[in-house]
Image (cartoon, rainbow, N blue to C red; front, side, top):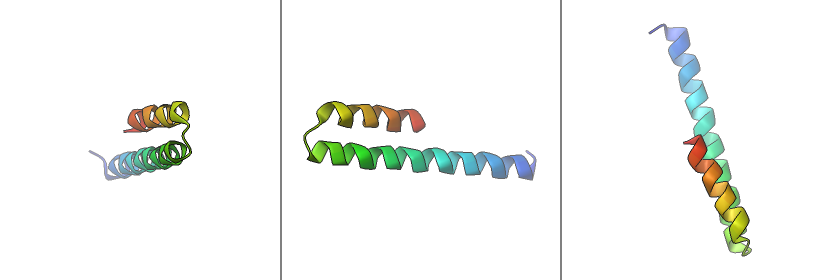
Length: 50
């Protein structure tokens, strides 16, 4: 595989994982404040990013 392509793929994967962790952070906040529907929605989004 071309090194430039491999670098771009790795950068994209890192962005996807960053987004997943961000969604999980939001999910944890909504769990703490008792908004289970929002918590679930953000967990679903995190799973999609992974």
